[in-house]
Length: 79
Image (cartoon, rainbow, N blue to C red; front, side, top):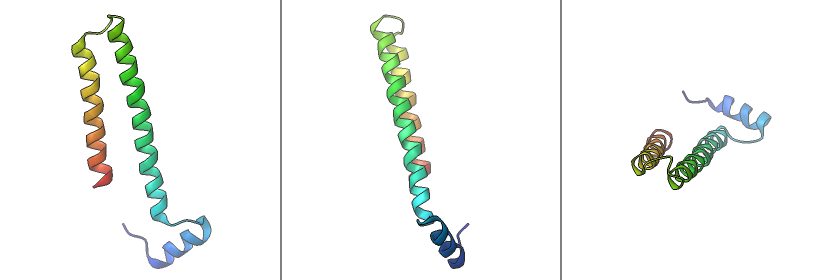
């Protein structure tokens, strides 16, 4: 659904920024959270692997799941 020109002007007047900027901010926050979570998950899995609590296959599984989530979110949010 697209905003009319009156709605867009009202949003800009009261918010101080364009509606597209808030969408860009939201996408940026989603990717930032995903990357922080991914670094945490990969680091935790690596530490578990280094301490012989996880197998190499489980470590690879964490990396593949993170990569798949990143690719899917990139496709849905940036297309």
